[in-house]
Image (cartoon, rainbow, N blue to C red; front, side, top):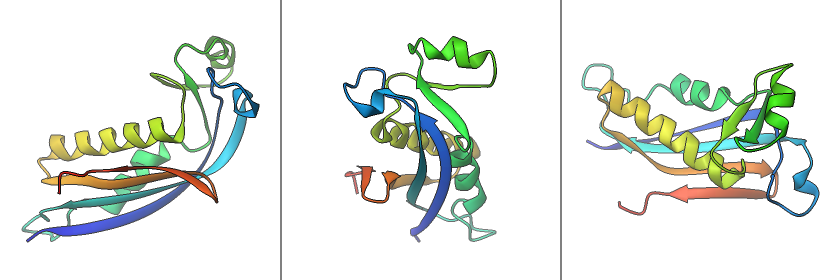
Length: 137
């Protein structure tokens, strides 16, 4: 029996887009909303597919953080005062969606959970988001 779950998590984090020409090249913050859909086979004992808290913790690692491209010259400067989460490219909502999906996929594999992220949305503001969808279903 296949089931699907959904979880929404909101975080506050700042970022800047190193290779962008415009306002987003400046360090700024957002109230991000992340929506995750996961489908698969629930555990036969508990009936749980993936604990909602796992999704919350996976997304929550970005809460109240500064997220920068690993090549950003601000990383070592800010890193002297607080941790910086670095990304393998500009930390766009598109990139963050893929990173969170990959983290959740890795967790499921490591735990032997037969599940996949079928859709993930990362909202940068109330009126714009990036979405990744698993088209294999």
